[in-house]
Amino acid sequence: MRILAIETSCDDTSIALVEANLRTPACRQAGRQDLKLEIRVLENIVSSQTNIHSHFGGVVPNLAKREHEKNLPSIFENLKPLTLNLKPGILAVTVGPGLEPALWAGIEFAKKISKELKIPLVGVNHLEGHLYSNLLPQINQVTNHKLASISFPAVVLLVSGGHTILLLMRDMLHWKKIGETRDDAVGEAFDKVARILGLPYPGGPEIEKLALSGDPKAIKFPRPMVGTKDYDFSFSGLKTAVLYYLKDEALKHESMKALKQREDVTASFQAAAIDVLTIKTMRAVREFGARSVLLCGGVAANQALRRALENASKLESASFFAPTIEYNTDNAAMIAVAAFMRTQRRRKKIPIVANGQLSI
Ligand code: KG4
Ligand code: ZN
Image 1: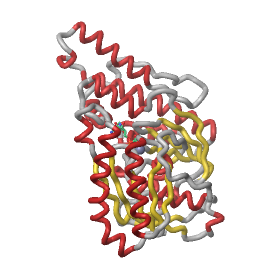
Image 2: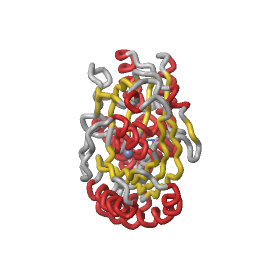
Image 3: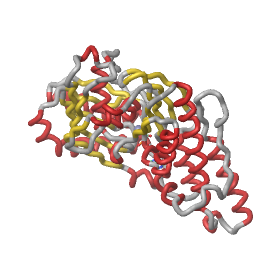
Image 4: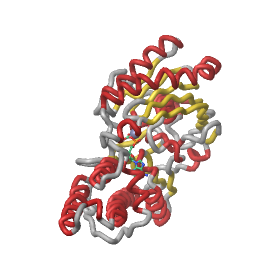
């Protein structure tokens, strides 16, 4: 099956063309562990609006919508020859969660293209996209080796700008949510701490860069909810702790900018966030006897987090998976795979209406 996919849930405009095949067994057995899936990413174009939003310290929904409306036709124009040649069987579009004006831009464009190409339109949950981003091979390579080596049950840590979620997967097609953040998402905490420090948006990569030359043990920031029995998270207290620390320090120094230890602050904040994520994920691994750990979402780009989870997984004899670097942050290739997997699950169709709060 060839899938054309459109993603506009936040500040990345993306269109992808992906080929996904279930070789054997037959579709009705797709829930089994021996699922034989082949995926080829034929094209995955991402146009980032970071430069536009960074002046505002975050994504401005109506500005994002306007930019998506501008970017979509020109990206599609580039993809048109390939699309007309390879004739996708379905068109997938992200309907949520995300910023509703941004989502509508994608949906309206998708409706037009679906009519033009005479192919059915299906709605996709953005979070299912992140979940399946681990299966995506690099462009124009076919892989199923990753899939073959994911053993179940698996624990998934989904960490993005809007979400921090732990899932327990029984197999490739079935999961349940076991925990999530009660306030800020971890990516949001990175973005807010960056803003406090005067670093540009998105803050995650900026913090990671500065943290490389800081001491993660320099400042003892709290590890919120690390000892609770549930699998929920809370990151707003951690952000506030950084803010108070800096206010105290600023009183001692001339100005915040003069602070010598921005590196130590970022390294210590990052270490606190990673500790909480790792400890809770690994507790779930032990409790549910998970054999694999899957990391995904924009924050999965963080190398320190990847290393911490990989090392912790090794100690529990669980295999660790994280997406190929270009698929950590938002992209349409992951939306295509999520659409394909949904056809295999035979679940109810998602309405083609923007739903900012759609849950997984
Ligand atoms: O998945 P994503 O592209 O968009 C959402 O669905 O939210 O995630 C974006 C988030 C932002 O909060 C950004 O700061 C964070 O991912 N992020 C990072 C890194 N790269 C992106 N956080 C920490 N370290 C990074 N290297
Ligand atoms: Zn995302």
